[in-house]
Structure formats: structure tokens, C-alpha cells
Image (cartoon, rainbow, N blue to C red):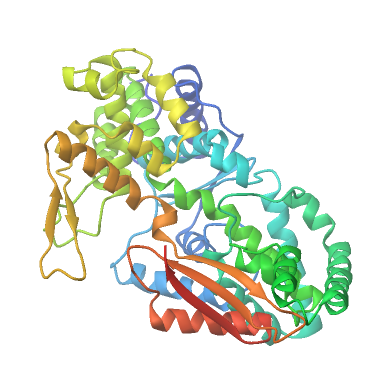
Length: 491
């Protein structure tokens, strides 16, 4: 008993420190994880609900939608309809991990291993987070954003600031750079230069307007239109970025508000592409570390049973005909695939050697997983590593739901052709380019009718929802100041 890290459900900060050190030793020495320094904070239920409402961030500007989210989650929690997350982790340097004070000590051990080392390693190593996020600058930038918006409310009134934020928030999902990233300073440097950039934006907008007025040639409409689109950098996939730079009606402070919202949308974009991998990595890490501590006699049987009960609940995958089915559980899929990679590397079957000749029997499952965590996202990870065994274990199959057909058709089952078709179908389902509308700005004649023209490329002949389409166009008109039109075409 003397070797146990803790005994019973109660915890104190000394127990948390000792357990965290033991977890970190295995994370670094056994798994070889590379993590940011950890800042573990114990928070109350109300603080956790507050973090829910502000997208999990420790600092956030004021907006009515955050309060609405707080009330929504608080009512569900108070009625017992919804529980709270055991933790929230923030992609920052240091990595901030919020742990709920109501957790028992076994649960604190689980969430520290899960968040402070699993998620932390994924944030630091995955190429999407390394390319698109600034962990060192995000907290300073959020502090700047909150203070800047507070000053805007004092100078221009809460109503104007709220209307600008409402419109910008409605466009966030269509306001990320998917394929390129323009040269820009870190978030911290951008916050420090904000006032100067507001002045530069004002001068740049006037300069662009004057050039368009001077260079327009009525007798050469086709060449003028091509030159206009070139000057505006069209087509442009990032709607807020285009409005921020070229809207005829926005004031400099409003352009900075759009820039803040756009930077936050971009910051969260990698998480939308890696949910299966991120959660699978965290589950795999906590499962390996806590089992290792149990094998060493540092976690007792009772505590391990509680940990495994919670672990199994999180990974539960209801069948398609289960009342609780809501799609594929990303925790279950990610963990199953990563455990399967470990099995293939250590004890492959003949089927595995056929499907995964480069890793089957290599023995280095740690290296294979760390390379996958660093270099893949959900759709490419599924395409590369989803095995027939996992498809059988999860009882996966593919359906076709065509508008012109009265019935659903099963298109992929558990045979050689079905496995490959099923893997392709599932991977496409996690590709954001197939899940998010493909909308881009294609023209805007600032010296003419000033109509903002958009193009939506339909995928699988699925149009935009009419109500959401009109509501979003209204937000675009608010920020553009003139008419906005959108054309739909088949890709």
C-alpha cells in the first residue's frame, strides 16, 4: 500500500502533484511524448459551465451568445439531463488543463493523463496545429481582443459592436484559409501592432477605391473585370478576410473586429479536422499510462476499476438501431484504430501483412503512432490505417441515400471490395471539404454597382438550406453595405 500514488476517492494538491509526476515519467520515458509545460487548474462546476460558454477559452470578449450558451448548459446540468466534461484542455504554451473539482482522485489521474499529456502532445506535434496556431501568443491575443472590444463598446456603443460581432460570428465557418496562409506576424505581435494597422487599413481602403475609379475603362469591360478581380485577389475562399480588406462601409475598428473573429476561426480550424485523431490519441495515452501504473502497483484495483468504467463509457459506440445512436463516436473510432495499429506492429495476422506491409510485425508501434499523430488528419489517417478488423469490430457498413431512389441501398459490406469501399466512404465523411459548403467571393465591382457576388459549388447536388442561406446573406449585407448575390453551380 505504501507504493500507491493515492488510496480512495479524496484528493489534495500533494496527491495531484505526485500522481502528475508519475504520469509524466511514463509519458516521456515510455511513450516518448513531447509536451508543452502543463498548467493544471482545479475549477468549480460554475467555472466549467462558464468555460463551456466561451468555447473553452480562459479569456474571451463579451457577447450575448456566450451568456445564452451558459444558461443552456446550466439548465441541462441542473435538471440532470447533461453531465459536465471531466476536463477542458487549451492549446496554449503553457498548456492549460481545467480539471473539475468534483472529480474523484482516480478520475483526476485519468483526465491529467488524457489532457495534460495526450492532447498536449497532439497539439504540439501535429502539423496542422503547428502550421495554423500560435500557442505562445493565443492568451495574450485573447486578452488584447477582450480589451479592444471593450474600448470599442465605450467609443461606438454596445449595439454597434454587437451587430458587427453577430454578423462576423455567422460567417466564421466560411472564414478560414483551407489551402494557404498569407504571411502574417504571430498573434502576440499582431495585437501589439493593432492600432497602427487600423490606420493603415483606412489608408489602404481609400487607395484601392481611388485606383479603381481612375483605372476603370468603360469601353473594355472584359479586361477591366479581369483586372479588377486580380487586384482584389479573387476568387477568395475566406469571406471575413475579403470583407475586412475590401468592404466599402466598414470603419477601421470594425475591420479589426473582423480580424479578431477570423483569427479565432482559424485557430479552431485544425480541431475540426482532427477530432478522431486528437481524442483517439488522448484515450490511447491515458489507457497506456494508467495500465502501466496499475502494473507497477502504483494504482490500486478499486481505482483502476473506476478508471476503466469511465474509459468504457466514453468509448461506448451504440449500434445504428440503438435509441442513443448519433453517428460514429470519434473517441471509439480513434482509440480502436490506434490500439489496432499497436496490435498490427506487434502481432499481425496474414490479413494485416497484406493490408499494411510496411508496419506489420515491425514492433515499433510507438514510432508508427507518433508519426501518424504528427503528419495525418482524420480523413488521411482513416484512409491509411483503418483495418478490416476494426471495420468488423465496429460493424461498419456503407449506405447510399439518393434523392431519386425510394430506398436506401447497402453499398459496402465485409468482403474484400467492401472493406476498401467502406474505408473510402468513411474517409470522405471526415474530409471537411466534403462537409463544409464550398463558397467563395468571385467578383465585386467597387466602382460600379458594388454588388458582392459569391459562388457556391454544390457537392452531391445538395443545395444550401434556404433559411440559413438567407440569414447568412443578411449578415454579409450588413458587413458589405450593398447587395450580395450567390450563384449555385454543380462541381
